[in-house]
Length: 307
Image 1 (cartoon, rainbow, N blue to C red):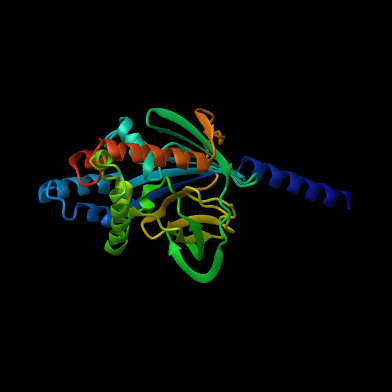
Image 2: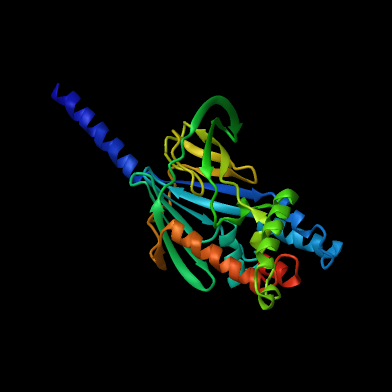
């Protein structure tokens, strides 16, 4: 009996040690559709077909990214893979990365249900610390193969992020007409000298949906509560995510990596909550849009392209 007890104790110690030392690495390919962005050029006489083609090609490359997720049982780090030939490695490039949901290091601690992200935008470093989004996943029996792994489908509805400009849509004509009618009424009562000061704002042309439906595919064979970007909370590693505009798919997976890295939260930058960061981004983008003449001008286009 004593020998059996010692054997069980030894096995338990081994499992605990293995779990403590366990670390995996997953590579994800992220692609964002540029269809909605192409609509911004409709009716713009300043943008020739050649210019539009060049801009769209540049945006396509900008929206095709590779990320690496290093994870253990309770925490993870998700970061874009650095490429020497990547366009826009200057401040404008970093700003565009942040506007499109990327940039910096995304640290998640699923045990504490907290996340930390460091981002550099507008020449300033921010450290966003907040609670992980509590997505109410609906599990399905539908399955598919991703590589050699059998994955199962799960869906959830999340609030659209105000600081992630991939979520914005071009405002339909009916809404734009309603806004214009309201603005005309306000202008009629405004002093004459103020009427000429009015500038086109980028935010007059776009809408932000309140909610976004997310589809994820997770693998129960890999029993970690982790996933790419902000996603977590499923009974297995999330191998693929689709939010309608962006698809993130695992292209490589290594379990029990030999060269382990220290998984810890970033520390640099001014500490803010997610809401505080969103408010700062919106305010700055409105200021830049007004300074550059709005989306219908060349200045406005340069602002959106991060030049």
